[in-house]
Image 1 (cartoon, rainbow, N blue to C red):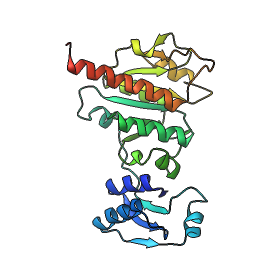
Image 2: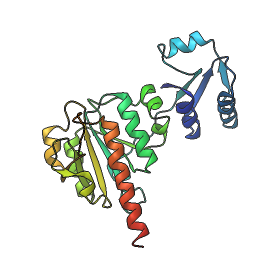
Image 3: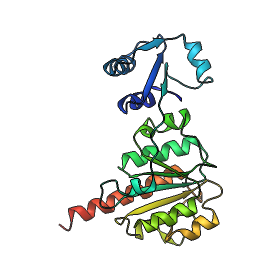
Length: 243
């Protein structure tokens, strides 16, 4: 699989996933540091004309860096749950096909120290170059479990002791009123469609982000970030205890 961009390739190097590296003739501090990382891992960068990298990436903003990487090892639902934390924090993507949104969600999951992502093998953005770049390389560090059916996966998560919280603009419960210190899976639906009916029915709770402006909803990645960092806030408060 080919990926591109300084951050995406740099994180792939840190995760020891890079098999081959191609760079343009540009010379700046960020590229020199990336080449040092590659050399330390025994990877020799191949210099290519910029137009060759343009062709490889179909004209995407590659920043003069293209890498061939190994795919991330697949995870299972039990592996996400048994991540060593007392209260796993998982994100379930129900039919989100925009790679920019998927990448942004993965970046937030990494930022909050989440347990991983659950995604359906169909009707989902491929975890390729666009997602790697949108996630700033976080896709190389966040574990992802691919499932055939999201509704069934929610049932399995419940059996594993995880409470499922669906995020829906029409929900009656504000997200901050839920106890997010418990083992939680946040379920996100695609923009414009939201959660599918069967998926919505399988959730233990349906929560909403109260909106007071003129726009009725948020971008799905922005909504995910709000709720995930609320979970972090609640868990930090629980650990610190009363003062």
